[in-house]
Each structure stands twice: as structure tokens, then as C-alpha cells.
Image 1: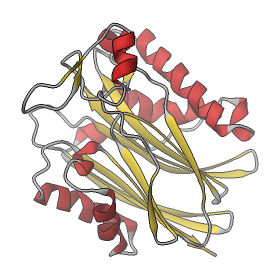
Image 2 (image 1 turned 180 degrees about the vertical axis):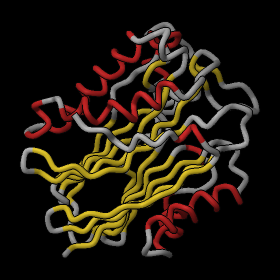
Image 3 (image 1 turned 180 degrees about the horizontal axis):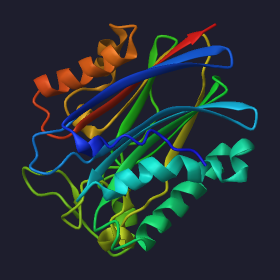
Image 4 (image 1 turned 90 degrees about the horizontal axis):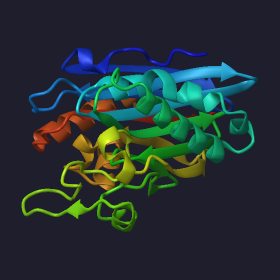
Length: 279
């Protein structure tokens, strides 16, 4: 159907760019910045930032995919997840149901592609802006999105910490480790309770997203999507304050990743900043 931002984030230590479009009565501009962390493995973060017109509707797509145990799964998500969402006919009437179905079908496709996609997995935060007026945000894992609207900061996602999903994990026969000096982990391994892929842990993991929707009107100013490499070292309000300093979203995204590095984030750091302006 559509080829979404096929740039390989894993191919270099840093990546940035920007774009803009008019969606309905809203001008939308975006900028992104991805920086490889201090780990000894290749970059495992991928992103999507794109505009599409289909069936008489203007759509804007944004996503951050944070891989673990390799970059195959986030790269697969970059190329396929939004196409899978658009294949769901319910998207035009019940977007939330369509997104949930597409997430599940995508996860099943990833699992069926083994060993092609390896042992790894990926978190995801995705945002779809419909006709410049309705924003649907979904996530699994600990990548996060925040919206600045009407002077308030809204967290549009849920951080899927293993402790938060402990009952579900334990009901499926798994456990959550809480070792001193370490983060909570599913079966002592994965630091998130929901993810795409991860076949070896899938019986104890969930891949259904949490979804929020907001109307985008003249009071909406900006949206941030970022991997946990950013959120480990700054909170929602701090990120918005930094992003607000520049009207150029690419500059804002670069400032956010630079600040995360300054605060000694060790993980891969990926960020998209979206600016809204009512016409």
C-alpha cells in the first residue's frame, strides 16, 4: 500500500529530518532526531514520520519503535504496522478497534516470521492524525507520547512497567524480578510488560496497546513521541518546556536528544516533535 519512511535508523549513529503538510484546517510540521546510545550493539530504534492522503482523508503518521535483541523487529514494524492499520476497514468508523486488531495481527506476523526476524522484539508508540483534527495515540512498552494543548501537558500513553502488569504476568505463569540495582524485569529478562515479538517470553507478555484520543484544535501546540532513552532522564513537563523553545520542530527534537545526552542517558535516544498551527 504505502511505503512509510523507509530510512534505516540502524544504519548510522544519528539521523534527523523534518517535513510539513496541511491537514484539514491544521498546518502540521514535524522534526525528528535519533541518536545511538552508549551500548555495544547497533542502533535498534526506528521511526515513522509521514503524510498520506487516502479515501478522501488526510492522515499523518508518526511512530517510534524501540527494539531489543536486534533491529529486525522494529525495522519490520516501520515498514508494515501502519499499512496493517489501514487494511482494517473499521479504521474509518472505529479507529481504536482497528488499531488493536492491527497490533495483534502484526505481532502474530512477526512471530510467524521466525527465524527470519530473530529472537528480539520491540516497543512501539504510534500516533495517527486524521484530517488534522483527531489524534489517535497507541503504545505498548515504555516509549511515550505527550501532548501540549491549552497550556496543559497530557501523557497520551501508558508506561508498561512489569510491576504494573504483575498480576497478568503471574497469572500466565511468569514472574517479575526486582533485583537491587536493576529495573523490574519479566522473568528476570525484559524490562517491559508488553512488546511486539519476543517469542521466548510471549506466553507471559501482552501485545495489546493502550489507546487515547484527543481533538486537535487551535489550543493544541505540540506533540512529542520518544523512546525511553529520553524519558529515563527527563519528565513530561521538562520535555515540553524544551520543545516549546523553538518553533522549528527539527531544532526542538535535536535539543531534546542533546539534553538527554547531557543528562547521561546511556540508551538509544529517539524523538519526534510535531507542531500544530490552526489556519
